[in-house]
Image (cartoon, rainbow, N blue to C red; front, side, top):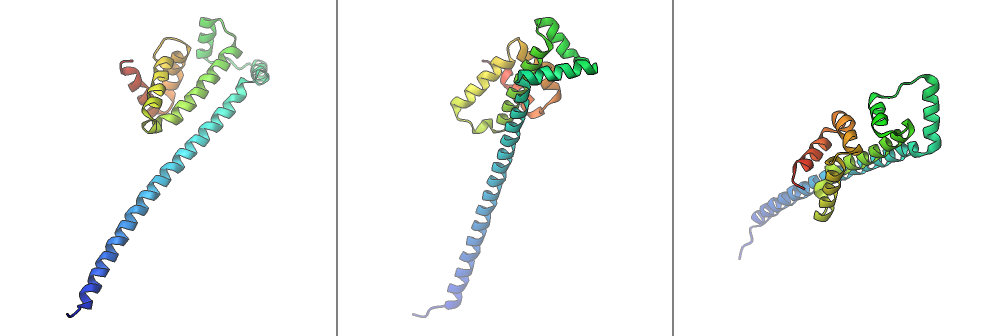
Length: 169
């Protein structure tokens, strides 16, 4: 039996080329996944930092210092804060602390929304349930959403929340 070494070599080269293409495809998928993970980690880090920095405004001394400095400098309240103070009977400091908490929750939600499809079914249902309860019912959170967050922040997050609110509870 005569062995055709040229044919065997050609088959080996074809198989080697196929293996290279498969390896390159695999590497492309891995790079894409790593890029997504890097974006997710950056987003989580930014959101965590924003929550920590915003949390400084929950300290009574910090809020008092800001209020004292603003009063001394003649800084007027934002019309929205004036409206909330009038409607709720709360002080400027109290309204600002509540707004701080709303912004901290908003940062959490905005950071979660791009990855909501990765949540398990129960987690996703719970996440959407709290969005409905927070922004779908009349109250402080809905006022903040409609007047500050919705018009001035992340459009993808607003689309997601409005989509959840449009669904039957």
